[in-house]
Length: 539
Image (cartoon, rainbow, N blue to C red; front, side, top):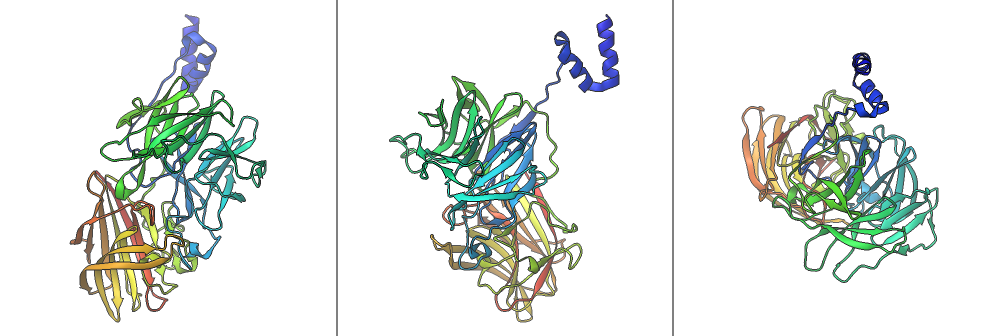
């Protein structure tokens, strides 16, 4: 009786945490409140590919690929693996060659991709290898991904789709396909075989590279998660397992699935929580929206990971973690009232910082022309955010009185094939123009060779104010966008409907993006003011 009175009184004075501490010392009275978080796949219906994830305590951090978009290497944070918020970018710009500035070529579909993020002894590390000259790998570090402040440690040998790994003895390794490299303690040099040590040979059924390597260690065993392209079959997820880092490794297919009518589930990472529950984050190809993350509960059988429902993706599930309230979403509206851009925005290639401003006119994003270019794909200072499924809508308000002859400004569903809703200034006249544009890139340099433009509507515009809207539908069999305009923000007119959005890995290699642009074709010096970007997620 005395024990019961003591526990009741203790709870009243100290709350739940005190009760848990007391219960931990009095095992028969232990009481835990188990919370869980439900999820529906995909957990993020947007272009967030090449997933790598790490954990420090309760905090999970995910890195994805954004290639030619700046700032790059986005870091997301979560405590439940279901709800994610934007935390930071690893770098603001890349400057190894002029192509990052849209000069002497481009880096469409190149730049940062297939990164690896790891937590080790109080620090976070990121490794990625730009698929562009000079062929080097970057390693960055920070104490806190939520604050950012990533520092470049070194550039080292180029590794394709590589995974950074710290072993229990603090030795540092990089895994890529079927090879392992050991790095020096300062990460600057490869120790030993400069070409890497081959730890297994690809078997006869495998075609092309084994890609997307993400390695973990569990109960003394090493596991390499990779995608495989079996001859005549679809992409799948495989695991190579060994008792020693140098092998021998044995292979098991753990996921071979088309989910919810969409194809190609594969490439991602395994992660545990502090209670030794395991999960997988794997992306799926979903057409025009890009490659979207799926979440799996993982159980272990005979020391092999079993994903979802015996290797099949589940539409619904739950994780035994308390729900996390994210501070922001990966796509958000913006009224441009803050002194800096919201973290969701990325520029198409490096920006020209002198040619945009949030302070020239408070509450507006001013986009100035600073370079004469031939087309949208060479236009600097174009702002992007992800589109989102199943449906999403983006609306902008543009003030146009400072446009010059030859200037083009507007809103696009941007990709290698783009739907473009623009205002074109010709002499002293303005026209609302809708066109379908597709870019032809040199496969080696990514130089823009030409842009085919099919104009389907041209309407005279009187006045200097216009509103543009893009409605995107990424439901199964859709991938279509509708374009509308208004001159009073009340009456809207559709100028194009059922524009087909396409994912093409040979060119931009990304999902369709909202893109706000202003560029000059005759002389620089004009500008437009963007009052807001309104964003709606729709079912």
